[in-house]
Image (cartoon, rainbow, N blue to C red; front, top):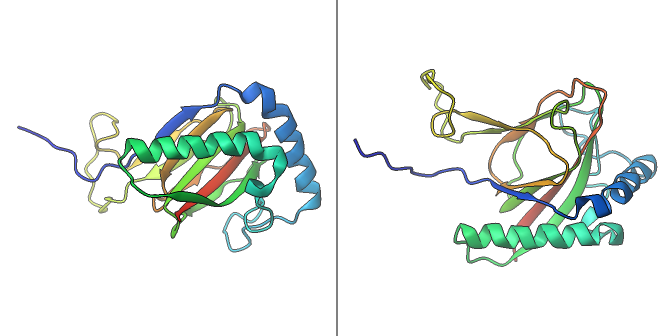
Length: 194
């Protein structure tokens, strides 16, 4: 039998090779902002997870310029790779700080076009995973004999410092509950068509 893939969910993975040069300064900057800026995301279920969504746009912060420029270049690479002929601009960027027991409920970033998650500080062995959910889930999904990206309705990604995930903004995703004492700091980006 011939099987073709229709409507795949395309997630881009990119590793920042210059992470060590900027990681400590940006982590310290996040700690400073956390003391000065009110937490955003007040309409979320996960109210204890600190974030600067709608309270502080990291894209306008000069300290994040090197990282932001790299993210923009990776967004363009992703868009080119999947054949987008659109001119995209960053609408917002913020950071999330996950302490023990923090999580992020299932959500999407519509009406944006492309979104990204950058792991600034994360231990892949102890920090909470990010989960992506299939838009094709019908509630009648049979149990797979093997786990694979073609038949599963949920895929998880371990956080790794320096890893960037790029995806369409309408893809539902979440962060499981952080059960370790290690802190997980991630940055989120939203891009819209100009």
